[in-house]
Image 1 (tube, rainbow over the protein chains, first blue to last red):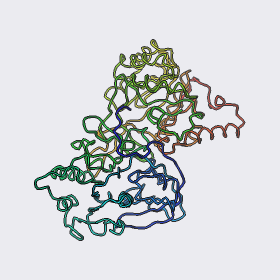
Image 2: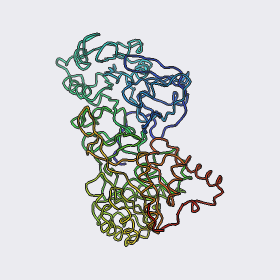
Image 3: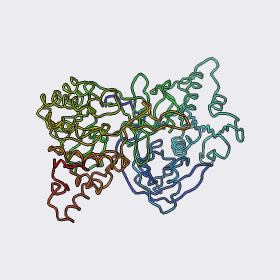
Image 4: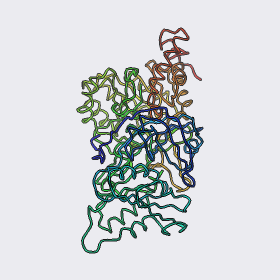
Length: 286
Length: 289
């Protein structure tokens, strides 16, 4: 297609490799979620922070693979971690896997986050959106960058523990006030990063975010109020997805200007100024 | 073969061994570029999926200029799926592709359920014949017509396009279906409905092939929910001369290779010389189920 976005990271796209990974660890990192650690050295080496994999599921009556971002990778041990909420037939089936079980994964796919630069990085995670950040934060810290993690959840037990972000300044918000700021993570962001007095601050920080669409749109509004350029915000998008490799055209998302881009090829990590936010609806949060 | 819309223009699935494919059928291609439908475009349903992509494609001119020269270097034929809103548009697209190196044939998509007008040609034998005849008159390329199952009598449409000069028919395109998000109280797909594919429709597709293959004398290409070698063999036994793989390409990118080898193993195991020995009935026997 002639409509491809300018991609934000140099990570390879298209095709990916398919392979049989073996589950080596299963745990519950936070309420309602499961973390599967698989051993698959080619994936652990190839995946850039923010890229995703298509996981095959064999649950009755399901057919499509499930797209999950890698939560983290460890090339040295050949391991890749996935964190997901158990919400439907596919994730239920995946959550039933245990040590020694095989998992067919396709990837890494799509575009990861652009981690280059030296400005402070603020990672804003809403709900399960936090699942992409352990590896991202580790990579940012390894680049010598200052990192703040702002994490929001409904209740304290649904927060991924701050210990998963060594080296980062982690602040939390919960809807019920059971931990940290009582309210949304976007409010926490506004509190942490108040509007500038006098001089603008365009270009002062990089913001990396992932979460439900209403949270993302609220964050975009807050960032604009605080004179943060949308080009300094990167969003890891979640859309319904078919193939994951650009052939089914099912994961279209509205592009700024006109038309659509494909989340699987042009994303999932996309600069916020590339998205037509007025056309983003809750339906995107699959 | 790999079915239209499930393999792009052949460039995005490097894992597939193209040498096992009889042909690649391209994404539906129209005269002008189309952006496609607004999201949400796909939804998983029991043993299947709905799609309403809306013929997103770069337009025939781009396809002829940018893609066809690359196809010309491949060892697998590429058949361009042609879509349009009017007889004139189908004719214009077919004319543009006639004689273009790298284009091995055309598949007329008179059965797309996801645009305003594509389906109407496929549901009326007279209109199906009219568009087939018009395209036939402007191209020397092998001409396949892809039939819609969303009709009362698919055999009548198949006969009409055979009489109008089609070299083969593909049966079938997707069934129109709907899925509703009970939490949002709203259809999942932005268009409300879409085309159902996958194993959910396999028995329906097989029945259509069985009916059509018994009534026409041109080859029938079976398509609809094939996931395994045995699925493909069912279509071949029902009278299909070839099969297309669709939704399975999304799930197992290597499926074409597996199914190709599975069919080969079956022929050896049953001491059959080739696919032509498979149909249970001879073509066009005018028998009914």
